[in-house]
Image 1 (cartoon, rainbow, N blue to C red):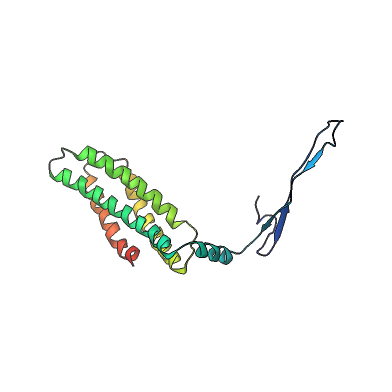
Image 2: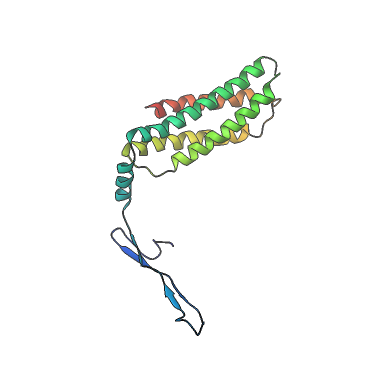
Amino acid sequence: LDLKAIGTKPGDILEFYLEAADLNPSLTGLGSSEIVRIHIISENEYAAMIRARTTTEEFIARYRAVDEQVTKLENALRKVKTALDAGGKDTSKALEEAQKTASETMELLNKMSNDFAVYEAEAGLQGVLKKITSKLSTRTETLGKVSAKDFVLPMLIDDILNDISQEEAGLKE
């Protein structure tokens, strides 16, 4: 149900019920459900409800998870560089892990940067996440397509690591 299309606004109350009819001649042929009421609230009221249910620790844990995932990506990329520097023996395996980690990281960054901001501080963090996501999007997409023998791989890894280090300060604040 598109609530905007029907013109609802905070403070409105919508009432719903279901009614069913049949053609059985031996019964009444009509049944209805209980009435269900939906109270339309503002984004501020919604944020207040979530804040009341969410502890500061839970809020911080969400962003720690992002930091840990980005660190995991950095470590995976460094393993690829180490494998390349060692002659490429384990590069394919390390690259596969880095590609998987990059995909997981981008999924988490996209989710977190587009989530509903409950706290004012969270809106600022989402801005940082959107910036990181934007910077990393094309590069991690390219990472997913390269092979261990591709000559651009070392430069691509350096570029991703540089992008992360430039934006990491904003995330840690």
